[in-house]
Amino acid sequence: MRSLNPLALALFAATAVSGIAGAQEASTITVYTSQPTDQMTAVVEAFNRDHPDITVEVFRSGTTELMTKLQAEFAAGAPQADVLLIADTVAMTQLKNEDRLLAYEDAPVDGIPEALVDPDRTFFGTKLITTGIAYNTDLVQTPPTSWADLTDPEAASGTIMPSPLYSGAAVIHVGTMTQQPEFGWDYYEQLADGGAVAGQGNGTVLEAVARGEKAYGIIVEYMPLNARKAGSPIDFVFPSEGVSVVTQPVAILAGSANEEAAKAFVDWQLGEAAQQQSVEQGYFPVLDSVSPPEGYPAVADLNILPTDAEALLADDQEIKTQFSDLFGG
Image (cartoon, rainbow, N blue to C red; front, side, top):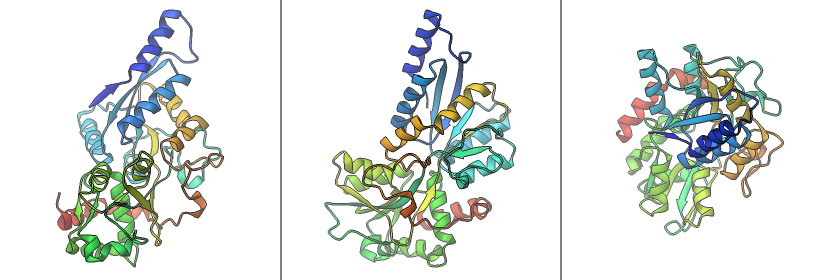
């Protein structure tokens, strides 16, 4: 569903009527994103405070579905997006390898770790999102501390996880876990044998655990931690063995007719204002100068599981097929 930000339109109209010239020519960009709708509404509102001349249209879905939509548009010769803000580097790497992304050599990346910046400057990490374990505090007396805890039959039968068929973060997580010698596909076979199930995206997992339909959920951290802050009976642990990480990279689609406006959106995503807003929304920031949300560990203290991104890209379909064979979908 495509939504047009009303504040952006109002600000644009006000500027046009008053005759106040902005620094850029008025234009419209379309952003394809996997970020939740309410958060993107806030993002566009904040962006438009700095760039009232740019109207931002948003199309939101899971990364996997967005990639399917993009490929269909490419096949038809009519891509609709100017900017992509999606969950994972694997999807971005695929688009880069297909020459679908614009190289933005002058992107403002000072203060952002090089590991989060594509060496060819085609995409840039905007935040860190880890995957760990959520649990319902009304149902669980002894919180899990490790991934291994979920393989206990009683825990496995109460576990739900997002599917790589819907979620880019889930693709990264399952791919990362199966690359670890201590887990591999044996880990997921144990979960499946114990009765664990797959939902669709992370939102499905959050709802199931928060409502008490499931005791445990494998999920990105900000959703349960934001829900906890709002009073939901849910909490989150960073498993002792480590967490997988996605960086929600931003990129400009090659051939965008609104390149300058798209660059302004990318610049803003990598700047202080967007990073502070990301923290308010519960994300780990990528700028060294910005602190994580209250109650989060320092980024340097995260135990991040190693990931071979090229292998993830090569194994993408195999990951989805094996996962589907175990959990359906």
